[in-house]
Length: 143
Image 1 (cartoon, rainbow, N blue to C red):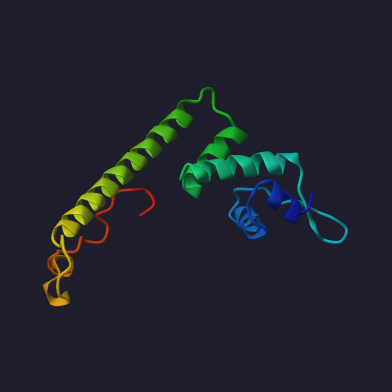
Image 2: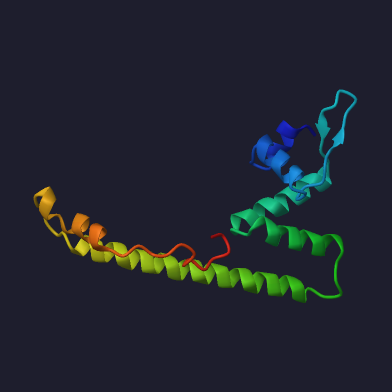
């Protein structure tokens, strides 16, 4: 199947498929005599796997590690469990960050309950007075 066909079947773009090939997540496709990429069912299965991992917010490094384990399976799936446990930790950290963000936004919103003159807006004063967080205070794997 051509790149446009596999892209449509996988609900992605040809650019994404080329990117996955370039970064080694997807093996290069065979070429036709006209130098068009030709993809098979193994490409589709791997692409589906990658897309599902991305839908779970996994990084390319995490996906690469899982693919390596699939390609050269260890005795057991303990390493897969470990990787998923680590990813769950990242998700939990992100949830905590989002809850903190929500609390900050609610606190700001609470500073201006009724419409006032702009120079008396509690939200704008609160944003001006807030101490910005230092870069790198986020603890997720996505940065």
